[in-house]
Structures are given as structure tokens and as C-alpha cells.
Amino acid sequence: MRCTYNLMSTQLKDLQFQLVGGHLCLDFANTLDNRGSDSEVNLITSYEHLLHFLQQAGAFTSDDVGQLRSSAEAHPVTAQVAMREAIILRELLFHIFSAIANQKRPSHHALQELNLFLNEAGGHRVVSREGGGFTWKWSDIGKDPKAALWPLAWRAAELLASDELALVRECASPSCCWLFLDKSKSHSRRWCDMKVCGNRFKVRRFYERARERSET
Ligand SMILES: [Zn+2]
Image (cartoon, rainbow, N blue to C red):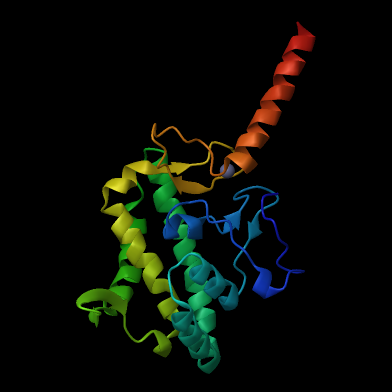
């Protein structure tokens, strides 16, 4: 199993996500570990886990996360709904970007669903003064726990409409399914993480070759 921690036994402050995807949306899709296998592990099982992920992945500042946490405490039922919607969005992002990584078309329905999330996020995207210039910001973060989902939907749309879309890959390990952006010079990266899946593959090949040799 890939995950280096156990969500049940680890203190939340020690929760560290492996951000090897190179993009917020891909790292978010990767928070269902060992996808489709008997040892599937959901790495985000609470709104607080979601906040930890978003902060570590750079989607929000610590101030923003503080506002989201306060909002979730003030609106616990909405925070639960936001959590459920975050999992729906995660599976949607996996469907879309896994299809693209495998040279397939994501379904029309999936794009429609993403656009619903995007509509909600877009109404809170504003331009704000910063220093001598301007910057994009999220407004009203502290008013709605669902604000946690806004950058996920927004960044997904940005990636879909960018040249980097051609670099989306799915790990070559059949038991992994993690997604990543292949920014290697030769664009030939096959593994989400060479230390984990690349080595696992090399070890398996070693034993397969040894067995082939012993059978000849
Ligand atoms: Zn992998």
C-alpha cells in the first residue's frame, strides 16, 4: 500500500499527502489510493482532511483555511454536504482526466457536471488590488463551507483548456491509477512516483525474468 500514514492512528497535524501529480486537480483525484483494488483507501474522510489537503496542495492560504474551518463549525450540515460533493467532484475529475490520459473522450455528462461546480465557483472569482497591481481572489470564503470546492473546479477547467492537458498521464502500474502531469524533458514519465510504483514494477520484472530463465 502506498500511503505512508494510517488515517485512524495518525494525528491530524501529521497528515501528509503525497503530492506527486504536479497539479491540484490530479493530486485531488489521487486521494483515493489503490483505486479499484481490494485495498482501496479513501485518504479524505472528513471536511478537516479536505482542508488539510487543500492547504498542503496550495489551493488556499492558512488564513483562507481558517475561514473555511470557522464556516464549517458554524454550518456543520452544509459542511457535510460539501464533503459529499467533494467526493463526487473527485470522482468526476478522475473520470475526466483518466479518460484524457488514456486518449479517450470524457463523457458529455461529466463535463456538464463539472460545469455545474464551475458555475458555483465562478460567481465568487473576483479581481482584487494587491501591491501595485491586481490579482485573482475568492470572495466570501468564510460564508460557505462549499467554498472548499471552488479552486478544485476552477483549476480543473483551466487545465482542460490549457496546453498542459496533453501532459496528463495515468501511472503505468495497474494497481495504482494515480494521475500526474508529465513535465519530463522527453515526456516519457510512466510512474506517478519512481520510488514507489517504478521500483515495484522493476522488482516484479526482476522476478518474472528470473522465473522465465528457470523455465528455459
Ligand atoms: Zn503509481
